[in-house]
Image 1 (cartoon, rainbow, N blue to C red):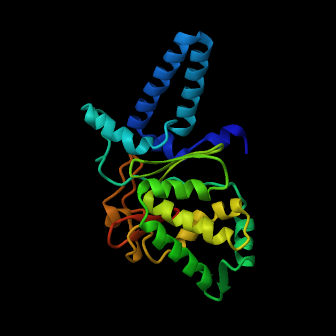
Image 2: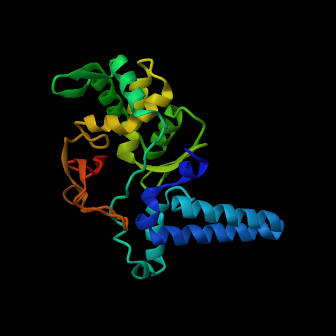
Length: 264
């Protein structure tokens, strides 16, 4: 994978590009570039060029943009110009990508006893589920700032983590993502439960998203989860890439999206 490919975020570019997010980030890049240009003209040009490339490849450079940009656009009376959906709707979480081969991850989880294989498919081992759900129950009581600290402590790399826009923003050496509170709770619980079984931390990180398929209770409120659609679960997401009929594993009580099933 090339450096450019690693930077691309197709979920926020192309036909999925959010115009308010792009405009807000372009403005931020321009302001930073001009400010640096006042101090040293070459630095200003570099900031503008790098910022423009990142906005083009990733959709945005400021963490949490999909959550605050629509609100900012609405606040200045321009939401009609971009025809962005209601900013009060839940945002789409991003993924903690560890770039680990899926087959390696699966075999490692089976060898560590995190997953068990039966005639009718793969299942989360009973003891792993007990540890996982116990940790989620503890994190459920944490404040947003305490949850951000838990995410920071669990991640297997140095990062800047903050509670922002009703979720958690993560700035690491190879990722810049925003994840929802329910996802943060589930993913931290996965990192702790899986790593404690001797699994490499980066493999544990790669397992955070797929293991959410085995969720039976909402990480955030503790209510049952069920297979449903985005429309039935929480009324649709707030991005222009919204797909209300997209199948998800969602909370029957609070409407949190725990896992999004891929398109077949």
